[in-house]
Structures are given as structure tokens and as C-alpha cells.
Length: 390
Ligand SMILES: Cc1ncc(COP(=O)(O)O)c(C=O)c1O
Image (cartoon, rainbow, N blue to C red; front, side):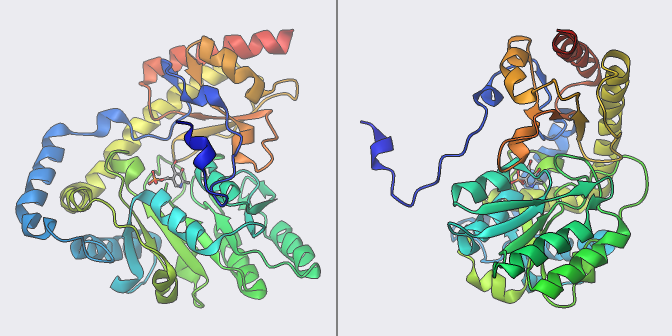
């Protein structure tokens, strides 16, 4: 049976991705997984046991519409303390990861031809969801302080002259995926003011807010400045606690939540995440930051030693490095050869609607150990050097 012939006419549009990204290799510099060692089997088992013990009676029916109330209360406090967000309990929706939240928003609000504004390079998962829906992505220039407000204003001004109103401004303002950049304090209010001026809401994706390694304290979220219900905030515990426990959340105005067709995540995963965070949230964040620091430092040292042609900024948080190579390098075309050499990365093009700008590539450092990273970057450097010297 050929099921491809049965695809509905409004099924997803085929989006070009690189097949080599699925390959099985030793040095995995392409994923944003949890650091595998941060999962403590004893404490995770205790949390799961307690979660089942405390909640088994609620396992029969479908879970509450907005999700487990104690987790929403915990989040209400933590976003107030860490991200300066004051929100009602009923504005917090527990989701199937940040991806689940983004998917619900895309399903509800995006159709063919809709315009969405995004940073110059943006998270490939959301980009793909949008492209599959037939949306048009307009990338806005960024620099080492994040999205440039003047460029955003310019882009929106030009679209407005053509009577075009984008549906959303999408931003990942903290340890951005893929660039690792954090939007400066000064730009946050400016970007929000532009969103108000043109009446275009912001989707603020802070999936990496728990991953400060060193460097300055994070500026408050854009959501914390929002007085006009212009910001929908999305975040996740997937990267912190494990991709298998895929739990995230959205903080949104009541009307947005009413318009979404919600899909409830596994209640077992949600209550386990609650029990674990309730005991270990801050300690876990600190432990993960230490592990990421060792991995980042290994990657930076190996790149400095073996690939001086790589142009990058050392990230002060998150789990990725954004590398610019001389124009001669095409990271998309070199990925097959990388896989033959037992490593993989994300070519720059996967973060762009047009799959261009492949002199860039993204390396992540959360999966392998510091020693493996040192080895893997040496292998990667040798391959890139061969092409630079040819
Ligand atoms: C910026 C960003 N948003 C969302 C996601 C998806 O998060 P989740 O696995 O919680 O669905 C990722 C995963 O890489 C991400 O980098």
C-alpha cells in the first residue's frame, strides 16, 4: 500500500531537510538534548513513585484542561521570580513540550500565505511547522544583541505599505537557538513597542532560560513588560529534565487559550515533572550548568586549537555554538562527508526559510562528554581544513 497517495490535499507541504541529520554517529553535535548524565535515576524514580502514589485516582479521567494545578502554581512562582512575569494561574497551560505549545499556536493561527516574522536564524522545529503550513517567513537581521529593532520596524513598515500584516513576531530572546545570543535589555522594550505599534503579537520562546552557565544575569522577559496582552510566552522542561519527559508550558491571554485546540500531555509525565521540580528545581539547574560549562569549554578550546578559521562568540548559556566559516565552506554540502567521519552538526540553512547561508553551522555540546567533544572537534576540524586548503 502506498500511503503517500492518500495524503490529504491540505496535508503538510514537503520541507527540504538534510537526510544525513538522521544518521547514527559517535560525535553528535546536532541535538539539543539534556546532558545525559544529569538524569539521576534514584531521584527520578522517587519522583515518579511519589507522583503515581499521590495521583493514581486522577489517572482514570483525562487530565485537567489547563494541566496539573500544583505544577501551574509552581510555574506561577518560578516565572515571577526568575522572569519577572506576573500572570494568573488560569493563563498557564501545561503542554506537550514547547513544541506542543508552538504546534497548537501554528494550528490555530497559521494558514497558507500568512506571514510570520522571525530572527535572521531561527529554531528549525518552528520554522518547519510554519513552512509545512505554507506560511511565508520574513527573517529580520540580528547582531550580537539579538533582533535589531530598527530592522524589525523597517520590515514591518514595508509590509504595512503593501497592506500586509504578519500574524506573529517569533523570538527566542534567551541563548537563542541557533546563535546562542541573548536579546539585550534595551531592545526588549523597543521590540515590544514595535509589536504594539503595528498590532502584531510576539511569541516569546524562552526554552533555554534555565541554562545560564556564566556571564551576566539574564534581562527580564519581554512578557514581563507586556501591558497589552501582546506576548504569548512559551517554555519547556524538555531540555532540562529529558526529552522523554516532554513537558512544557504556555502563558497566554485567556482569549488565546480559548481559541486553541488543546492536546493534553501525558499526565504521568506532568505529575512526575512536578514532583521532581518541587524538590530539585534549583539544584538541578545548577548541576546542569556545571556540566554544560565543562562541555562548552572543551568545545571552545578544541575549536581554538584546531580550527582558527572558525568565527564564533563564546555563549554564556544554552547548549550551542554558532560558527561562521569562510565563504568557501558549504556546511549543507559537507554534511554527508561529516557523517562518514562519524560526526554531525546542523548546517546553517536549516535555520532559514530558504535553506541558505550555509557558510554557517551550529554545534551543540550537550550530548557528548567533554573528552568526546575534544576528540570530535579535532576530527571535524581536519575535515573542514581539507576543504579550506583545497
Ligand atoms: C527554541 C526551541 N523551542 C522549542 C523546542 C522544542 O522543545 P520541546 O522538546 O520541549 O518540544 C526546541 C528544541 O530544540 C527549541 O530549541
